[in-house]
Amino acid sequence: MSAARETRETRATRDIRDRADLDVLLRRFYGEAFADPLVGPFFTEVAGTDLEAHLPGITDFWERALFRTASYGRDAFAPHAALHAVRPLTAAHFGRWVQLWRASVDGLHAGPRAERAKAQGERIALAMLRRLAGPDASTEGGNGGFVPLAALRLRTVA
Image 1 (cartoon, one colour):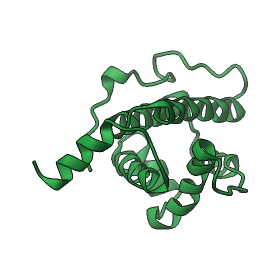
Image 2 (cartoon, one colour):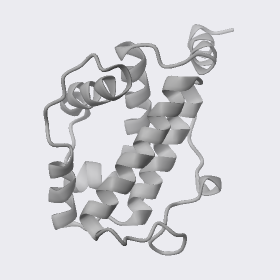
Image 3 (cartoon, rainbow, N blue to C red):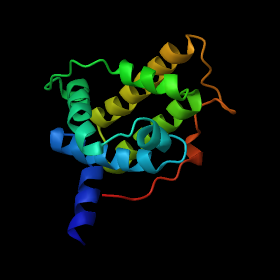
Image 4 (cartoon, rainbow, N blue to C red):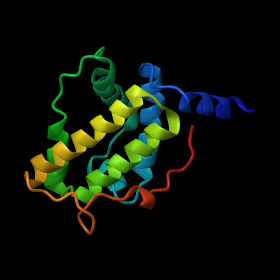
């Protein structure tokens, strides 16, 4: 068995343990998000996100959320509000983000922290959607709704 495959298989059978695991997870997630036709343009065209510059801060965010060990003092909503002002973010965008996030976590990890990461990601997406689109924002299917998991095909990446 190759070292890369062994690492993937081992990681997928254990929980998120530390910042190094978050780094791998976030790189996988953002690789998929940047390439996604629905949400990718928000990262690549609207925000012009530099992953290497973005990664330390977002890793701090998730490290604080899952381990309570990092400091994250930024306003996570402000950048999303700025994006929304340029190109509106809809339930479909947040739904795809959730689907990509869940698939990325599931592809690498299993356990209580992995489950908490997925639940936290969904809570964050719903909260942001409601702050941007109003408390009655629809999360139902159709043109504006969350993307069903069956519609997602995540490429295999390390």
